[in-house]
Image 1 (cartoon, helix red, strand yellow):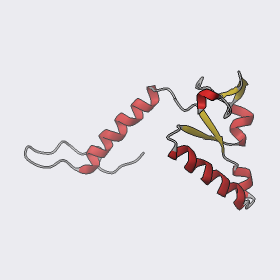
Image 2 (cartoon, one colour):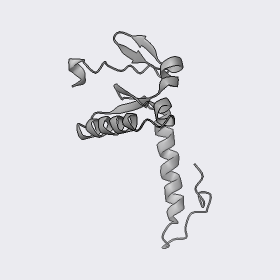
Image 3 (cartoon, one colour):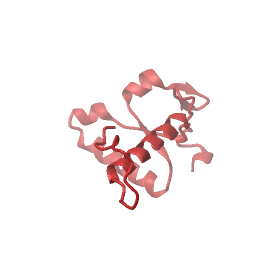
Image 4 (cartoon, helix red, strand yellow):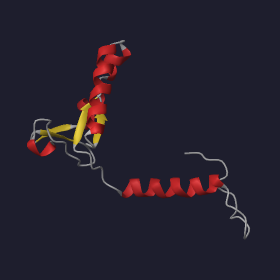
Length: 113
């Protein structure tokens, strides 16, 4: 992320800090925390990018509806696409597992509801 002013010196005493510097500190800290963290979403939502590129508006409408329902139910989820299914994810114990050792539950699992 490139934010102008991130390398500015600290403000003199009594002066308000440059907001871009504060934003830079926040972004740097957030990036560090995300790098050392572990993904927590247990639901993977297939995002039909190939269908969307071919102009399938129904696929987009369905995806938006599902995203809205998951967010309204406060269910944490990750989008996955065909490339993820063919290269990154493997099938393991009724769910998908990615390179981060994160596993998803099937949508029919009673724990997922």
